[in-house]
Length: 299
Image 1 (tube, rainbow, N blue to C red):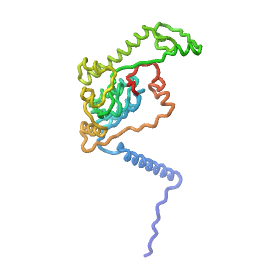
Image 2 (tube, rainbow, N blue to C red):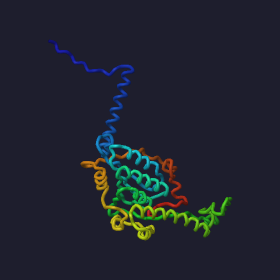
Image 3 (cartoon, one colour):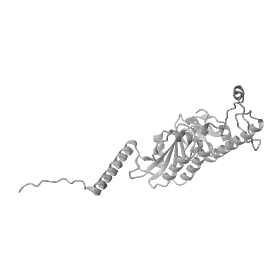
Image 4 (tube, rainbow, N blue to C red):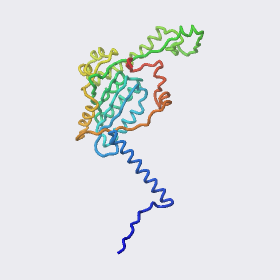
């Protein structure tokens, strides 16, 4: 009996061939993404319970991305707990408050653990107060419970170069904070009242979330920073530990068996123009404008 030659299947021709090419490309892309996820420890495509990871890095200028990530993770059935990694000196007040409020709402549904990196001060600490548990490294710089506002006064400079600015305003305080004139006592009292009110808001949150009496918090809330070790002794945080320790704790609180895996929503890199002009939130340029902020002056 003659041996029959085995013919290899050929890709279909015409329209069917293009369908075969598209399907093959989709499979290849999926495999590449899968390999990249496994290499980074992100098992988002896999099955099983996971800890959702959200990172807050650098000055806080917008809350949109963080709030959207928290919403998405809180709605996923495979995410049993959420870990917020903060490495920030703080920033704009409203975004800090919005993220804090979102964490409060999420923790009512799932455990939320905050892990502090090198620094989680002022607005960074404010955000952490919304979590179920706050963990810091021994050397983490945190605290800085306070508000700061500053603006330049260029009157002498303008005089030297012979430039004058004429201002038409509807009220006595409409140009308060202008660098083209000296600040008056009315200006200073006006801004001080705003800063004091925002400071009171910060203090009230610390008193409520940390179960500390107001007198104690008032002594701590003079703008100074504390180490993680000092913060634990003062009752500002719950425990000391690394990011790995925080992942384990989040897994335990989420009743995840074995070593918990993390899942982090990937974002495309921010372009230079988006960084300068902002993306639906506080612009980077306004970071330097005359506005009160929850920010540690050290960074």
